[in-house]
Length: 229
Image (cartoon, rainbow, N blue to C red; front, side, top):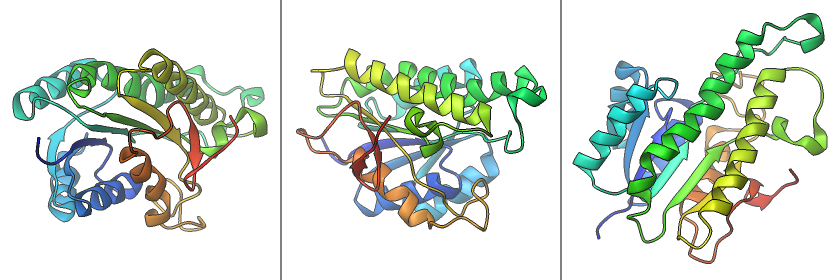
């Protein structure tokens, strides 16, 4: 069958790019899928990967990407839904947060992964053991939910729910679906004050992408350990 084939959305920078680097180092053939073509091409060159444009907020872009993957590769072994946005750091619902902020965040952080997974599922089913990894956040935990960044929190909690639903629907097919938190990572999104490196943030995603056949599905992980929902 040859090398495993992976797609990493938002793989042009930050944690996504590091996931691509680590996967290629392990012999996986990686496709970086991102909106910014210039950054995507440069990132692909850095990571030893391929690039194809993808805007996860635009259904037509997702359909075009899936068609290209079918023509170019004919199957998919790993999908990392990494693309995401955080635009409401200082927002609070009680202060009159604009619902449009939540709508935009859900479009990228929830509907994006859902639509991308739906579009690529026929290719994932062709793999003997496909893996889907959804990039969530510890801020999505209902067990520790608090105030601040409501759109981001809500979107990632919804992504966790999507993970559970997909894992249950795909049980017994060989397709495993998990979600993970990278922690607070020093990236453009996380900021310079973050406590973790991109290498640390990417590690669990790569581990989940390469799970053995007896590995878990439908779980929420950080540092390769299952955490509370």
